[in-house]
Length: 417
RNA sequence: GGGUAGGUGCCCGAGGGGUUAAAGGGGGCGGUCUGUAAAAUCGCUGCGUAAGCUACGUUGGUUCAAAUCCAACCCUACCCA
Image 1: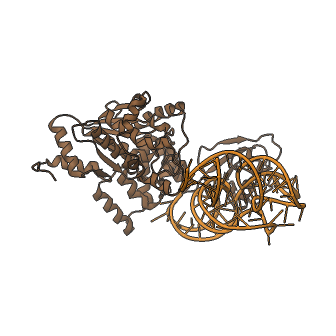
Image 2: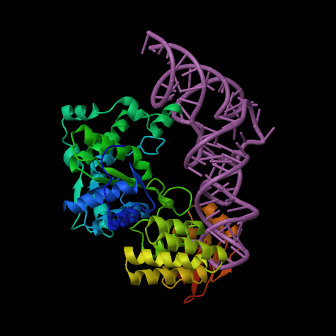
């Protein structure tokens, strides 16, 4: 392109760049460009500023967020400056990325509460003491109208509307609120303020992150503007749809209990195992290929790989002891189909022949009487391992007897008469 | 301000006066099976013991009978001014 003579790039930076990019997409330019950046940073002894913004729209971070957080950590491990932006101002708009509808706005209090939990959870992955952690309300909330207009004047409406999700919504006659159009500007302005060299994000952040590049130039940055490293979005436990705060059922949250997290990881489709390992940066590409082959040849049971994966991640986000407990719980509960040890108990001493259906409702084992009956008719209710068939069953047991009630696969209750 | 097309159950989406608690799909839940809370497969999926009661944007109306017809209103998109 230009007349600059080719720069000799040391192997170490090429290797670093390769490793940092693994699984992701680097814009613009690819691995070489990053290697150059890494080298010149080393030459000038100025660590790269690596930005990651997270909007605290929900209280929990999930495994999908850890994909980029782990990347951020990887940069930290190479001595670069991590900048974690808690998007408390942007959260109030809500990122329109990939959305087909406007988000309900959050209150300031909700956002601030979520922001705190984000920090606690991010600390499990990145080194927060070395990271620079800022909230974008610091510069966005107090912005004067004239400064805001100055920002808005940097881009054209057509540029913003060309963005795929807006374009689709326009074509499909779905509403776009005006404030949503400002989202990319706000996020891009963050890059100007923190003077980022690299911005990390999910692949749905392409537009927003590239906006940061443009704005940095518009605001007079003389050094090269930020590069953008986009990571694919991790699919949730269903293996199809991305893990997203909008679909809580599909998320593995960092705040999930060890047992829950272990179980959810076991429920991912087999085909997702290598995908998770790749995006969470757990295995090298060679190892992934080998593992894939072993699975196909039937040498290795996907279940065992999943158990390994689950145990590893639970150890990391909780601790090894809890991971072991989670694994044992999974084995007894699901593999052996045995009754778990510590199940809730209910004292029924003195209660006159309680009805099973009523009991299920009272103990929230079923949402309605009809549903309780359906469960019984479908063979989903057991007493001491025996399927119950009588919808009208009354529990007449002698005092002192203890019986385990099981509803569906996961709900247990010990009844003491 | 005027016009047009829409608003259906958790979601998508059929239905255009009674046989519609509302087709079909997705999701969810349960059973079977299994090497797993994978896959596959079958079933269930408004509330109520029941009579019945709620439910198709809202409110009224027409009818023996309305998600379906009428009116007004609210919301959304598009077109025109």
